[in-house]
Image (cartoon, rainbow, N blue to C red; front, side):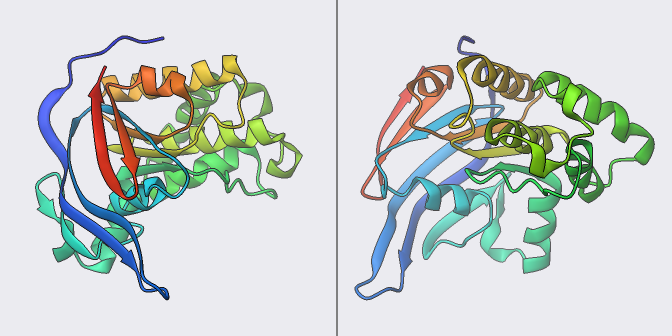
Length: 234
């Protein structure tokens, strides 16, 4: 397992008083006054019980949802002042996402699934084959590059999702239980890929129940009842 690293003392994410309340009956507050500063190249693990606000926090960080109150700055820019088009473009080009559901397209090959991300980020076509080969080797799936998504096992689909998320070297990688369907060796390979990205300056935020990931990260954040109750540095 990797050791703590020196990260760039430059905030990429700054959350101040972030609250998220869903207008149900009665209203549900998923986040309550969260303050958080994250540096460039930092690796964070977010842990907590079901319903503690982890997924809501991930969605707000990824510009998939908006907070009810508070301020979210991304690389110094207030995200609340961005147009919907600017948020969509930023999310597509500079973020990588790994969800519990892999969202791998069953009628596309492994290589084609990954190529979709490179098309979105406008990576030159001549560079795409080498980028796909490199990332598939890192997640141990190069031998399955021509397999259709619907023929993959659950663990293989998750590794494809991870490869697709990281192939464009995103500025921010957000992952929800990325190793949940993987064996120990595959999980280690995934964390090695995350380490490589972090060394290149990608900020990695992982929601997890896996204590190994909490130990791997530079910081482990604990959410409880929508509040950030602990922030442990490695």
